[in-house]
Image (tube, rainbow over all chains, first blue to last red; front, side, top):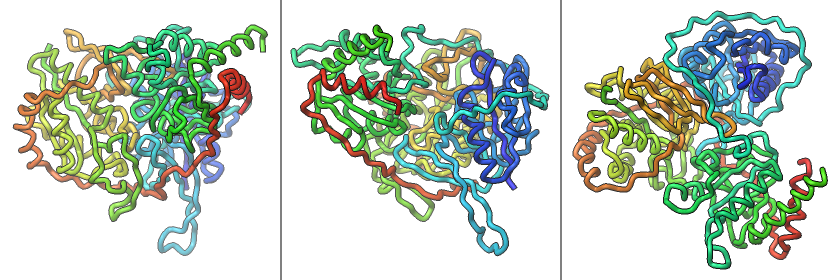
Length: 357
Length: 270
C-alpha cells in the first residue's frame, strides 16, 4: 500500500506557497485518489503553519518545518528539513515541485532516506499489473513520464524501490485551488548541521529590464538573424533591440534566444545587450512552458524542436521559405522580414494599449 | 589562501547536431548506433571544466582532475580535443555510455573514483560538474556524489564564483524568473553544479594537449570498469515524440497583414 508525501515551500515573500508547490499538491491529490493512498503534505518555510490554510481543505495530514533558518533556500537547511519531513511521514512516494529550491536538495534527501529519485516529471500515471507469479492480487504500478537528451526522447519509467522521490515539472498540473480553512499542522523539529552558507540576496535585472517571465502566455524567441546584414547591406542591431524590447513591453511576452545569438556576445561582435545565457532555449538552455510561442529570425533544431517542446501554439517569422526545421514543428510560418513585421506589430500593440483594449 | 583541489565530473554526450533515435539492446534502452555517433564533452560540464581551470590558475599550486565515466575508447576520442583546452589530470572510469543508466549508480561510481584519487585533500575539495547533463538531464548525480563524500554545501545552476583571500566564496545560482540567488559560503569543501558560467570555450593549445596526454594515456589503460546497477529502474517505454504539426506556410502576406493576424492571435485565449 502506497502512502504519498507532497513537499512544498514558501515563495520569496514567505507569505504564500509557491505556484509550483501548489501544482505538486494537485499531482499528489490526483495520485492519492488513483492509488487510494494516504496523502500528507509537508511545508518548509520560516512560518510554515501560517501557509497551511491554503491547503487545509486538501483532506490531508499536514506537517511543517518552521524557523528563520528555512526562510531562504540553502542546501544544508533545506535538505535537513525535507529529510525530517520524509522520516516523519514515512511515505513511499514523495512528490515535490521541480523548483530551483527543491531541485537543489532532493537528490541528496533521497540518498539520506535510502531511496531513489527521478526528476523533471511531466506526467504521472498508474497502471494495473499482475506481478509475475502472483495469482491473487493486482498491483497498481506508478509510472512517470520524463524526457531524455534535452527533450528529444520521451520515456516512461517505473521503480519498485521505495521511497521513490519524484520532482514534478512546473506547468504540468493545475495549481491546487481549494478553499482556505483552518489547518491542523504538526510541527516537526529539525536538528540542523552547522550552517556554513548564508544567502545574502537575489540579484535580478531592474524591473523594466527583466525579460524572462515564466508566467507569460507568450514566449518570443529571437534568433541570430536579427544581427545579420539586412537588405541594405548593413547590420541594424540597435534597431533590432528596440523592436524586440518594444514587443516585450507591448505584449508582456517572455524573451528566449537561440544559442548562436547569445554566444555572439563573447566574440566581440555587436550583440543585443539585454540577452544573457539565461534567455537561451534549447540544448544548453531552458525548455520553458508557455501557451504560445513566436520565433523570429531563427534557424535550426535548437529553437524549433528542443527549446519549443513545451510550447502550445507555435508561429514563426522567417525569410527562409525552405527552412526544414519549421515544417511540422510550427503551426504557421510567415515568410517575411521580421524587422518590417515587428515594427507593424509594435504599432498595433501600442495603439491597442493607448485605446485601453 | 591554500591551493584549491578541484574535481570536475563530466560525461560524454552525442554531438547536439546529431539526430537521435532510441534503440533497445540487451542492457536496456540506448541510442541507435550510439558508439559511432560523434560525441562531445557534456556542454554544462564543459563549462564547469573551463571555470575550474580559470579558478585554479588564480591560486598557484591548485590541482584539477577530470573524472569521466564512459567507454574507454570513446573517452580517449573525446579527450583528444578536450585535453588541448585546459590542463588537468584525467580519472577515467570504463562504463556504459548514455543517459539511460541509473543516476544513483553513476553517482556511486564517480564518488568512489574521487575517493581513490591519491593525495586528495578533502578539506580543500571543490567538486564541479554540470547542474544537469545533456543526456539524462536529471540533476541528480552531482548532488549524490556530494552526499557520498559528506559535503554539506552544494550549489546548482551556478553562473559565477568569486573566491576571497580567506577561502570563503560568493556564488551566484540561477533561480526562477531570470534571477540569481547570491550566497556566501565559508569555504571548501563544496559542490558546484554549473550552468553556463561566464567563460568562452578556450582555444586549442597543442602544448597543453601534449602535457595532458603524458598522464592521460596511462590513466585510460588503468581505468577501472564500473557496472552500473539499475536500482529497480525499469523503462516502460522509450520513444521519439510523434507529434507532427500541419504547418501553414504564408509566403504572400504583407507585413501589415501578418501584424494584424498576429495581434489577433496573441490576444486570443488559447
